[in-house]
Length: 118
Image (cartoon, rainbow, N blue to C red; front, side, top):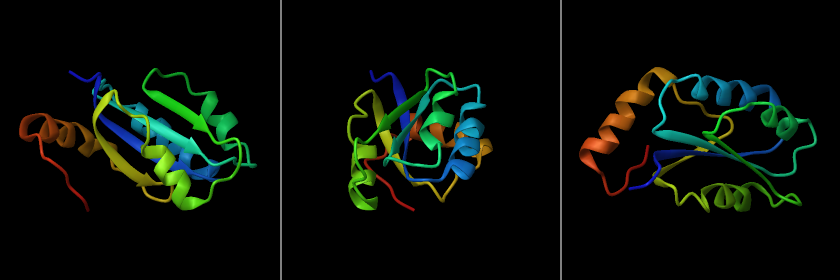
């Protein structure tokens, strides 16, 4: 059994004003079935440093040594999430309503879909 049901994978670049509050909102949920993986593409606005201040074992931070570009960074965000059964690719401009997360996680556990997209 995997440690998490879901990894919310976010590729980001210079979006501190949005992503930090989104990540905090997700992690405010008292649910240990998911983690948040943020792949920072070498942000210069302090995004990574602000995210490092969040102390939650469900947050996985990774930073590229150089800027890879949007598509390669998105791919990197999805890589290496073996501890989760499912991954959700989320752009740093998008967000999930935290109140739907428990229902979504229940759905994944009960129905075990092969894949899905929105």
